[in-house]
Length: 371
Image 1 (cartoon, rainbow, N blue to C red):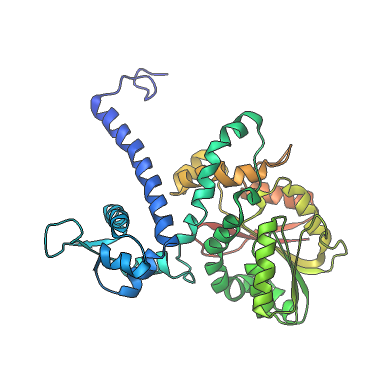
Image 2: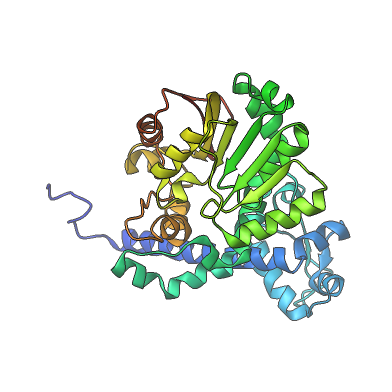
């Protein structure tokens, strides 16, 4: 190693200050994330949108039934972080300032149906960060905890994160890329969503193809409870939800379509699930994999994914604990399902065709897999 190596040379004062600033920026992001959670939970963003013009913290607090002093400090953080627009008030006293949402903030922080909505990322933040108390034990024992350990907030948070895009694009833009699937579902074929969460994809498919029979499978009690409530509210009669440990996937090749959306990397034994999918799928059926786009090396993920740091950290807090929640778990992690690994598992289970679909998505990769 040369004397100029960044790991051996004596840092200059400027280098130390730069690194200290970088570390401090991480804390700034963490506490601002907590404030985004509060803004979403307390309805502050929605209230600012409803007010429709710059307002004082007092006016915002009154709108939400909150105490002004707390709202003022929250708004100060949001303005400092560039998430609220700050306008000077008529005087110089604290509380004279006026705050507003920029137009671009509305789809991201207010409109839960917009595919750009991100407030759902922060929905289960308190439960996720509470894991920091017990995570040292996981580092020592190797065992994690499943998603139900995070409570029902985790199931709803995942729903809020991913469903807006799926509702808009799954049926209209993605399934037409999988040859023959929409025609078969329209004619009454059977489909399943494995790792269905709170049922968003199942409900989309059941609504779009009323002749089809659609089943969702998940091992999360909280997710299944919410999925069944949503199904009852929807009035749909062609969908059901099951825990595969008590009611497994069929083994008779009766399914025309199986989907796994954002879940394979969280599973303790994804290879076994892939084998079950192959047994359930007809010889002319299709398996649609949707999972977080991952590159084959850490260096490639860091270079090509601007969210890599967030994703690896999220993995330690949520995805890795799920994948290691049983002894011998696969522990793939958030960025662990690379195209090579996915194809290897598919071929080992008896699938012979594997191709990436041309779908424009900011986070996920889409694959069509055939027997």
